[in-house]
Image 1 (tube, rainbow, N blue to C red):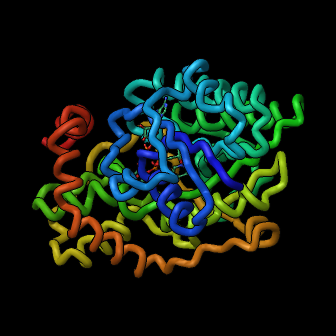
Image 2 (cartoon, rainbow, N blue to C red):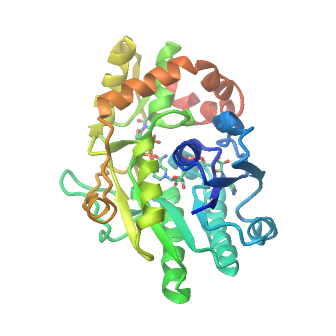
Length: 339
Ligand code: NAD
Ligand code: TYD
């Protein structure tokens, strides 16, 4: 593989993926297509701005002409689609951009990729399309889709389009579904970076409901390695689940963060629950191990320590976000809940 078009590369996982790919594949070049929504940040890949193998193209994945203009010279071997509206709470406030980018945007990328005979397409999806688990069991690739939030519904719709393009047009797509990521460059609306930065500033940590909801945490680098493996070795039409083998209640995670930061538990504030809040996610990644030789490598405690250290060393990165584009959302989301 010589040339990739990656969408959403200025976000959290996309920027980590581009960094890992360029660091490990000297002959690879990447075009990063990103609309630069509130979640897109050029700073995330500032270290590559003078690298001739990296090109940034600002634009929308829903824009057919723009995407076609990037694919038309036939030099792109693979398309990897990270671009999405990614935050569940925002999808509850307004689902329109989720339907537009996650569904219509995916459909447009599929059409453009098909038109230009792209050899490989990877759809980055989420375990949230499977819905919610009780206290037992894990999601396998055979678990029926049962999305519960507007976010996960829009991701599931995109997965169904990918599936249909494989079936109808023999389109060479692979889909990956991963559990909750953590690591550097995560936008501070998500639990881990939000709580780290709030705790450092002595602000409350808003725990939804009882705090007993369970998530399976995976380090972003493990996820990105899995996407690289699925892209190169995955079978067309298949889905691969990735998880971190690190299930934690939100409350236990919050305690671990506070302890690592040397901050008191009195910062915790129980706030009203997220409507439709999924109880538990857990992943069975046996297929990825068997077919791709992939498993998560990062031990959660070590990954969390490294992540905290990254946020401590990059406090200016997070503060620029929190004082700028993020501010009005934070006030809307938490203002009345925290008062
Ligand atoms: P993010 O919100 O940090 O980044 C999304 C990026 O997409 C941003 O750079 C944004 O500017 C860009 N974007 C949004 N709309 C666009 C459009 N119309 N055209 C072009 N660019 C657009 O998200 P993330 O956490 O990095 O997630 C990336 C992908 O991984 C998403 O598809 C998400 O569903 C999936 N995923 C995320 C997680 C997680 O834990 N964060 C877990 C599993 C899967
Ligand atoms: P989040 O990081 O938004 O990821 P997702 O909803 O995709 O799993 O949330 C992770 C968990 O943390 C989820 O159970 C909701 C909870 N949560 C809080 O308790 N407080 C918060 O302020 C946020 C953002 C999330």
